[in-house]
Amino acid sequence: MFKAAAQSQLKFRFATHWYHGTFENSYDLIKAQGINVMYNSRRLLDFGPGFYLTTDKEQAKRFAVLKQRALRFNRDQKPCVISFELDPNELMEKYDGAFFHEFDKDFADFVADNRKKLGLQHSFDFVYGRVADGTELVDSTSDYVNGKISPEQYLKKIRNPKYEDDDQLSIHNQEIRDMMKLVDMNLITERG
Image 1 (cartoon, rainbow, N blue to C red):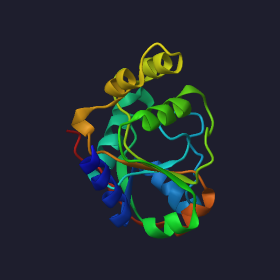
Image 2: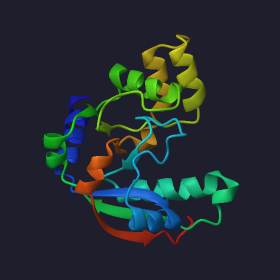
Image 3: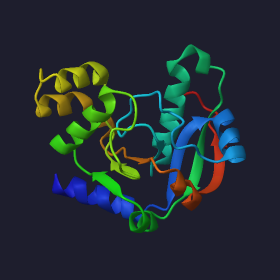
């Protein structure tokens, strides 16, 4: 456990390139108007509504392709990965953040709080940590919130060993976008 937490902390502290998986039309909107950190306010997400990034370009790519395949109206969209530069040390100096480096009860409680109802359920400017995943995420969150399963059972259902190293940084303060430099965008051409 300690080794995984230490690796997660180091990944965050030394990452200067961050990636966002999305569609080409979203990139055009970001390029024209900038990032809107609350654009997904109608979705239940691990760390609440915000602008999500990862240190892993392949993870961002996987997310964009899965998003395209998930809904019929997305199938004509062109998935892409947007690269940003963001200094995590400056972020920590200027803004209030939360960190979830381990799959533990604190992570479980935070994810459940953010996935049980719409809207931002915390006051952090940014949150960094693990990624909840799994086919039972919605049902198991409901069961956990209603006391039907333990924290350990919930964590087992939302933890996917295949994506154990995935991470996410969610931005919840619109001012942070001024610290982010858009570097480039790469269309995802393979459908594999």
